[in-house]
Image 1 (tube, rainbow, N blue to C red):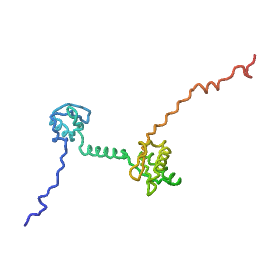
Image 2 (cartoon, one colour):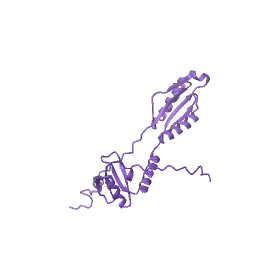
Image 3 (cartoon, rainbow, N blue to C red):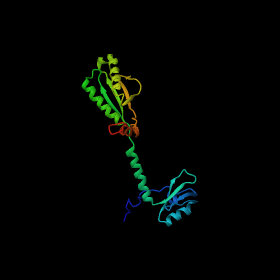
Image 4 (cartoon, helix red, strand yellow):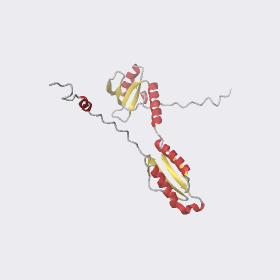
Length: 210
């Protein structure tokens, strides 16, 4: 029989770095589940972890000596992946949303795109407003720049302009970045003595007799 051409293939083995025997440091600051922390030779720390049915994993390789914890490798790997997943969910990728105008854009189209820009800025994205000039419209660059400045002013409560409008070829554009909104300040509590003073009885009223 001829040997199978697939028989010599082997799947790559993924080496677990900084775990058990792959730890290169001579000694580590070992942390065990019962809370004990001890600086000890790496082989001794590995043996002690394995006696507990755990792995020795380096969690702070830049420390002197490196910090290693005795824990279950599978559980540690799961927690690391969960942290990475949560970090990606919290991370917001800032995008540049482009809105195109013409020098003679009518009010309805202008308001429609302005509302879109407000939504983009409130979502934390940047807005690039572009005025396109076609044919003889290039002779009216000043109209396009006025439109961009009006647009930026209408969005002043939601974003800040990055410089002045720029003309590149047959397009003029301006970029607006979102502004960070400060959290509302808590209202100051009213003095408690005011109500008591109003409710106090008035001396010399109808109920007093001499």
